[in-house]
Amino acid sequence: MLIKMDSKSSNNKTSRRDFINKSLRISAGITLGGLGIFLAKDASSEDLVWQLDPKKCIQCGRCVTNCVLTPSAVKCVHVFDMCGYCDLCGGFFKPGTKKLTTAAENQLCPTAAIQRKFIEDPFFEYQIDEDLCIGCGKCVAGCGAFGNGSLQLQVQHDLCVNCNECAIARHCPAEAFSRVPASNNSLFKGFSGHEI
Image (tube, rainbow, N blue to C red; front, side, top):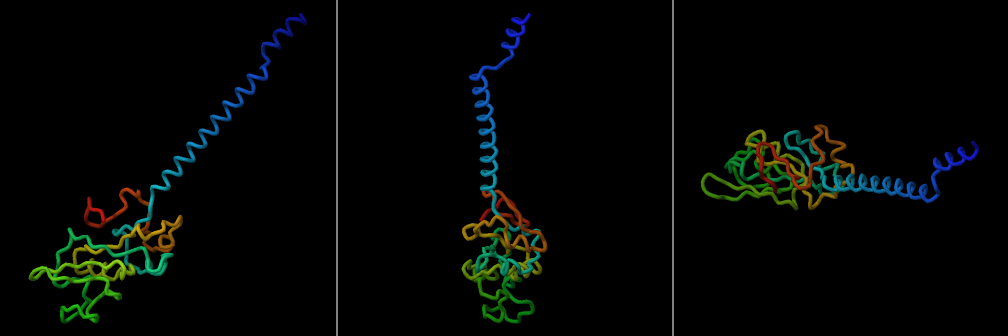
């Protein structure tokens, strides 16, 4: 009987070699699984960038003051396909302007970042000088109030440092900032299928 117990207990014992092999396989599986999760998480975070949703934006002016960059990485963009090329552009002229000239006192933009170019009577083209634009949104508010909203604010990704926690997003009262896929990083109001 003593011999049977020894043979039975020896069958249940795991050899040292089997124990080491099994331990190595489990360790390798855990390591590979963890590495896979880490790489998947890292790849998805690299593909996201900050963007402003113009449907939510209230043109509060905080993009100018809260961005870590001076001037801000938020700039006005002109969605030309939406523009009416108006003679009296609500995004270019101050409200109540009597003469439609490009004189500084008539312009809504505090930095003269919008250039007005005659096309043909009565049409004008408006272009944004990105170097002068500070992202204040005054032109966007004017265009939305008296025009079709073709002037919109967007984060310019060639300027943005893509902070882990965007300083503007933290202070945006309309919660208009979110992370969007880098491959489709432009959000436009009233127009789809167009990228900058």
